[in-house]
Amino acid sequence: MEDKIFEIREQEKQKEQSCVIIGIAGGTGSGKSTFTRRIKQAFGDHVTVIYHDNYYRRNDKIPFEERKKINYDHPDALETDLLIEHLEELRHGRPIQCPVYDYTVHNRSDETIPILPSRVILVEGILVLQDERLRDLLDIKIYVEADADERILRRALRDMEERGRDLRGIIDQYLTTVKPMHYLYVEPTKAKADIVINSGMNDVAFDIVRAKISELL
Image (tube, rainbow, N blue to C red; front, side):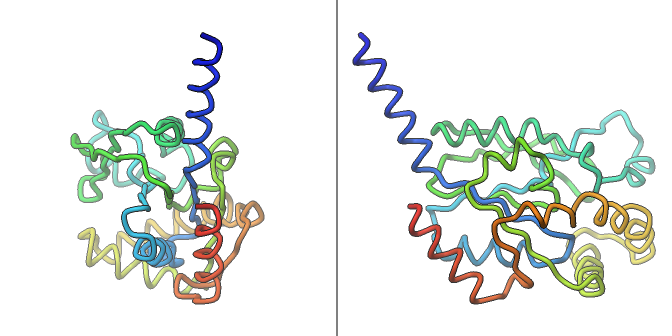
């Protein structure tokens, strides 16, 4: 009986060791998504991507106009506890139902996406390195930085083209919450990263990360 228990524990341990979790953080518009896509393309089906943004809390009881004013760049806006729970499940070889956030209504959708365990899990989001419990789950911690002017321009284009936002609303949100929260909660996490890169298209950094993932696998 004891031998069987030991065997099961060893199997669970091997599952954990075979899973590499990588956190990719950085300010809005810094190039996180670009870097994430490049890693996904390099390793294909061996990689699963989870976005911290999908774990924004439900705000069903708050009217739409009020939801628009919520500070979505503060750590409390995210249900990080659920993300941590899901990463633990994936690390132990169990599938999860990932929530989906609908930017058009500023609220979590009723649908979920089934996520299966994989060899590499990428976790992307501006505050991925902010929570110590989440950091402790990460095998590699990456921070992508970019000039502030570049970041706001990229964010404006993205929000207008992909999320149906108007320019005035983007500017108001940036000045009232995005910018102050970046300096208060996001940029300080750069010191927690294993690797800091200045662009999602930095080929040298990408080659280093790709080689490290290959080594861990």
